[in-house]
Image (cartoon, rainbow, N blue to C red; front, side):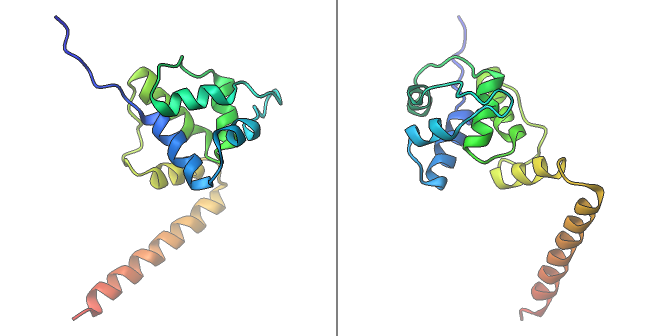
Length: 138
């Protein structure tokens, strides 16, 4: 007898939550999701509806992931990792469950060395300010 495993919903949750943040319909998401390599729309809005409702769907193709990266305005890596988690049971190497942290980590790879240095400087400035404000609160 096999133990029941809980169905992962990482990808469906990402799509549903991001679509809500963007305040767009399922149909609109399908319309603006274009594979940047082929210029095609690799899925119809019905597939997104099924995904979001938790109905069984086939794992998305590479073209679908690329198109959703465009349609959801998220780094491709974030979309790929959510799909890998849901359909393949893989864990992200990004240490955080917070999507904002994962997006930042994915975007870092797209930055030049100078941009990464600037971002590191910003992070250090925030850390110093937080430390200073923590020390001043009596």
